Each structure stands twice: as structure tokens, then as C-alpha cells.
Amino acid sequence: MTITVHPGGFIKRNYIEELDLTATELAEALEVSGSTLSRLLNEKIDLSPVLAIKLSKVLGRSAVSWLNMQASHTLARCQADMSGWKPKLRMSDAGVWTSRTAGKAPAKKKPAAREKEPDVVQVKNPRSNRYIKIDRSAGRILSHKKSEGPYKDVPIARKRR
Image 1: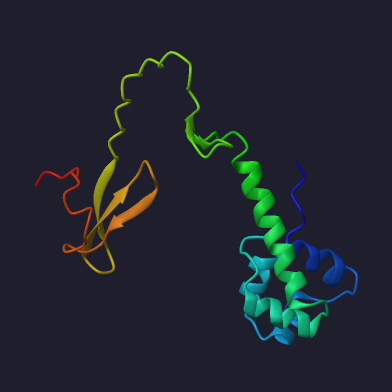
Image 2: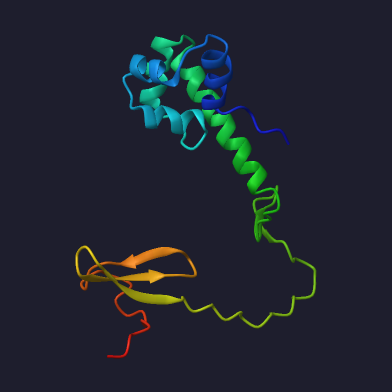
């Protein structure tokens, strides 16, 4: 399956490189920040309808064609990501739900895998003198205030005094 071109890659190849434009010049013409245009050109963000209208007025092509390019790219990427997915139920031509396992012996259930407990630590922020909770296994900050929601009951590795 071929993934269609992202609008940012298309702009980079067909406008910036071909016409010797700089990203800064194009960002100024579009009246967007340089970082927004950079993220689009590097295919980190999707094209918004507002930016599609601006592109159509600055570079040409219709706003619809810019959005269609983004939609085609997004759909092809999702189809590639979900190529192995199979639904558990499917609607038959007769309008009846059928199971993927219809007519087969029921599969043996595997024992449920135990969820790995988060590796949570509490460290003191030297600037604010507050403690923050960090999940080292997921590499993210869980909470930085005492009153914050779902993570207040997470066990924390405490330092001995």
C-alpha cells in the first residue's frame, strides 16, 4: 500500500526547493509562525482548514485540493496502521451479526497478563520547592500538585528522613 504525499512534503519539494524560497519567507507570507510552518513541512502536524485557505491564496491550488491531499495522506496512513485489525463481529449480507469465530471451537482464554506497575518516583523541583511525581517507565510527569486528579493514589517511592 502506498502512502500518499503529505501536504508539508509537497510544499517543501514543489515550492520551497523548486522556487528557492525560504521557510521564513513562506511563513511571513502565510502569516503563521515559523515553528508552525516548520512542523507542517516536517510532517509533524496535519494541515488545518485555515492554513489550507491561506495556502490556496498564497501558493495557488484550491483549499479543497490542499485538504483532500491531507485527507488522502491521513487515510492511507491509518489503513497501513490498521491493516492487521480484524473485527470481532461483522454484518452479513442478510443483516445478521456474525462472529469471527462462528462455527469454530471456542478459543481457550489465556490468563490475563498482569499490568506492569508504574515506576513512580517523587522528586523535588529545586525552582519551586514542590514535589512532582514522575513515571519513569512511561517517561512522563504524572502530577505536580497535591490536589491533582487520578494520580494522587499512586504509590510513591519515598525517601527516608
